Amino acid sequence: MPELPEVETTVRAISKFKNKTLKEIIVHNKNLRWKVTDKVELASKNKKIKEIERRAKYILIHFDDSSLMIHLGMSGKLRIQKIKNNFFMKHDHAELIFSKEKIIFNDPRRFGSIHLTNDFKHHKLIKNLGIEPLSKSFNKRYLFDICNKSNLNIKKVIMDQKKIVGVGNIYASESLFLAKIKPNKSASKISMDDCHDLVKSIKKVLRYAIKMGGTTLKDFYSADGNEGYFNLELSVYGREGESCKICGAKVKKINIGQRSTFYCQNCQN
DNA sequence: CTGAGATCCTGTCTGC
DNA sequence: TGCAGACAGGATCTCA
Image: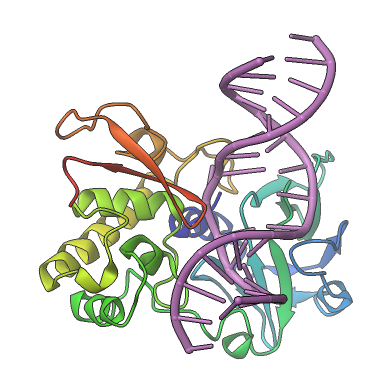
């Protein structure tokens, strides 16, 4: 489910817990993408939350001496629920308990993960992440450099979390459409002008998706229960056979790295 | 080092 | 309806 905009939307929804004290974490199912360690429950009792932020697709909840790292994987989501509202949903795997409310981690496919670390910056899942696409350092020069060094096609490059973080399968297709670049174009053939357009497109698409509260394709809801509306704005993703919103040609679907990829054969080169 | 492919897991949809 | 198979927003690991 979640790419950068959905994670950002989730972080914003739970940011109201900043400065609140986490009473405890209860893990119902430790078998996530990685086994949830006992430390997560044992070392997170009565911790004041100093900061809540997003890094790549990770939700980071910082305490004084440690940080909780939550990844939503493919189907994970957080929801905020009143303590007294005592109901469970299938696949509720963990609960962050506060005085009146709790944050529940629900993840049917269990590709998500929860870690507690004393040094998140050097955690193995964080330390090799690439730059944030919405930061100033993500510019045409940077993109041009990584494209030049790569033998992959452009879609694979922009989805490589070691290079650029946060861009997943939906927004990769959407950004490439906006930049009028074919997803299977060889990265090494990308011009500086292409990079200019693509950087602008990625930023624009991500910012707009955040503004719309993310994309609700099947069942993404923000932690506050709101639906995301970016799916109404999708230009090519999931629109195989439908007409391109620009030129009217049929939207094509191909596979790139076992992921569905959508583009307009007419608009994108 | 790079890159392709398999893999983790459940739910939903499509086609026979 | 039933059932098999494909597919789904991620990303790591293995192997060549």
